[in-house]
Amino acid sequence: MQRTNYPSGSKWEDIIGYSRAVRIGNTIEVTGTVAADAEGNVIGKNDAAAQTRFILEKIAKVLEQAGASLNDVVRTRMFVTDISQWEAYGRAHGEVFGTIKPCTTMVEVKGLIGDDYLIEIEATAILNPLSP
Image (tube, rainbow, N blue to C red):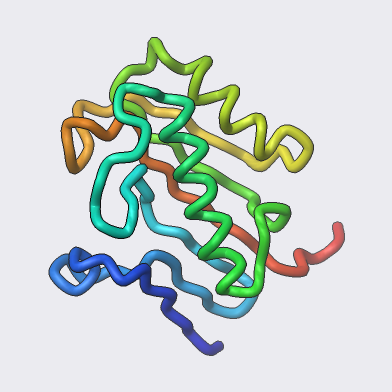
């Protein structure tokens, strides 16, 4: 199967050695994504829902580049720094995935790559999934 990498252009991709997303066959994996714009500025500082929405928009864009959409997402993983804000993260996630309903996980972590990031999200999408 062919492998296609989808970079975001972040300087960190070459330093760390990763891509925003990788597609192999009909599976697309999206790397952990934080609420940072193209210049590396934090979006939605101190706002759990705003960060979640921004991240899901970034994920939607890379899925589109890979020939998919949010409708193809089968799993998300949310890493949060303050689980007491679970409703804010969850509601923003539900705004996007309320009818799609992928499997999801929300885990509290000690910290993320920067102190102002409240959440990091990974996603898995599968194109043309086989019928049962």
